[in-house]
Length: 334
Image (cartoon, rainbow, N blue to C red; front, side, top):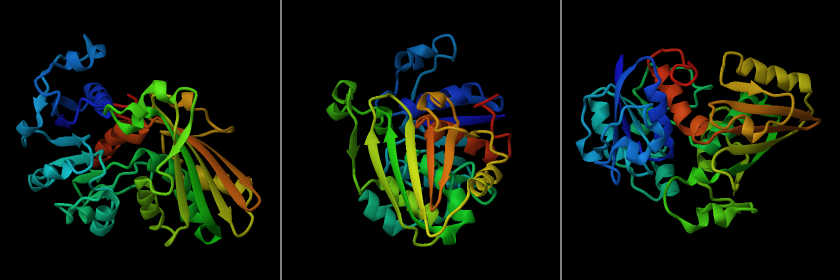
């Protein structure tokens, strides 16, 4: 049995982390740490947990100590690396749901997030925890949880760039996210009333997650020609992603089906669908649902995830399970 610290535990992703940790059979106890919510009771922040989870007092992040075995960080970028290096020196296991350790290069991190990284040596030490793809968790105690858009996009593309890289010319993803993807901050532009009956693109050509996706694709196909275009949907959660892979030759449906079925044969949270999936099929689950269509010299992958679970907290618990060599379903799908 292990003890868990949840840092940034009062946001949307923190709520799911609390729930998953509470139902995990190998977790004996957990503490919740926050800044603005410190000192409040859990039921004050999440009344829906009443009588389901013990009503604990939320600790101030300044009280974070070395008493836990594993730490989940759900903080804005630029905040996690204030604490993580000290924990790594104490041989603690860490899953960072933020962006501080996702990129491999200090220079790329600085240019992307306009911040000076304070522990760039850990960028090479960490592993990128795309749970269905990453296999070896034995060489590090630091897992960088992928972003939500990258989770959907990379699960849709890595099987192809791994298996037919020479046939791929360009890859383009158009993704739509629920409003919770921007976090719990107060912002008029993110109000449901401002987005109702509307869809809009944002950060066109400049979204930070494009850099992250290209980094991972380049590990299988150097200099991948990739683009990501993101949109806001007037729903609370979920990501819908359509990826088009243009080829220099034709492929058959049998060929692409074999690629995806082989890649995800042992992945209990991947569901390959016979028709394009619907967002409502994956909300409140840790599933990645996808349909793959081969059309002469292009492949179209339609996919969806819950951005707060598969794109954040659920995958984080998968990564914890893999760090400890446990069944990756534990706590998520008991």
